[in-house]
Figure (cartoon, helix red, strand yellow):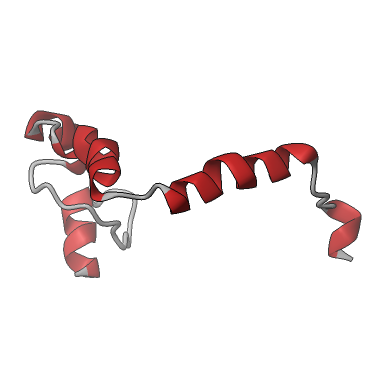
Length: 79
């Protein structure tokens, strides 16, 4: 019954993406291209990541037992 809700049809745009972008990345893949893509992520300061990771700079979810718990307590429970 899934087809009643979602219907997937390949379009010319899908084919164009596959031939021009996806395949092109596979053929022209290089370490320099990888470095250029991730450079912006790694060149950001700790102030940027501290904004959403918190003072402990931990990138993980937490397991909350109540709405009053802090993120740090929930993260400790997960680890």
